[in-house]
Length: 354
Image 1 (cartoon, rainbow, N blue to C red):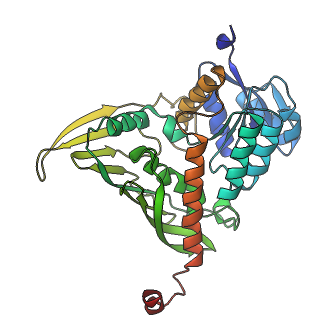
Image 2 (image 1 turned 180 degrees about the horizontal axis):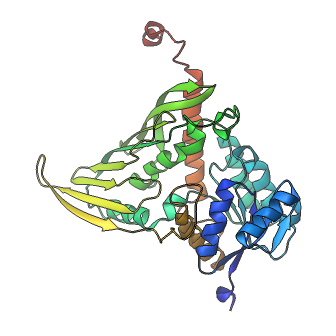
Image 3 (image 1 turned 180 degrees about the vertical axis):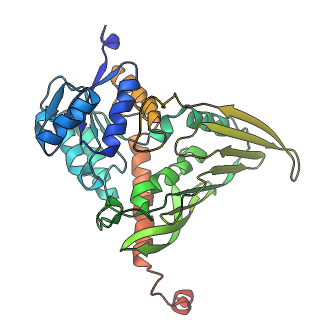
């Protein structure tokens, strides 16, 4: 039967994140990487040899024309996500795009419309949502275990101190911390307040080398719930998520973007809680080396995509296209506020009176 056949992945890019993704595919039952394409045939061949992939292409078009490829992973630099995803959808290939789906809400919206119009599977690779720990958090929230959610706090930062001047993080078009990791924090609002709209967004930030570097954001949802988060390139932060409800709280232990431990703390009066701990350890990843911590967790997303494709679904239920649209609209608003409101030159008095 078709369910027994492995889902065959084609990888667009021979970069660092694509390398981790290829390793996670190799670890995942029912999935295999059969083709890689890069801008140079030499790079593609090196990548194919390293990851034991049978086909290497020196152009993206050749891979998209390969009839054996069931699903395409776009792992290129962020500037290329939009054009490559569009080409992949037009080639009628189910498509998974590394975050961010594009650099703007407008482009994300046109990709979503294209995939719906062509009836082709599309997913933004918000892998965190596919982790069993995240699904546990969603169950606890929906079951009312902590009552009505009041506020959420989250942080994520990694130090750019050693990032060379040519590093992607300083790219004027696609660099900055919000487009790098802001989506991890914006999506937490969907976990805590399922189905709610982000009604008010207030952000402030500090730029470095022309890109957003430390940003704090407050979001109010349509049910009155709040989300407060910061991202920074100035420090490796704790990276914890706290969801506070009327009857207790849920804590996602560090590192929250690759979540493995969830704590449910039920309120028993001020300063007193009854704690339950739920653990979902990652598969052992010590058998190889990784470019990014926790990348073995891509296996959950690879499994989820395989399940969706076998069922003929056109999006991933753990992170839908509407979820991508909401996150994209939030990041757009945050970036606009940070860039419009360059606090390094603003005079507080004029801001107060405005």
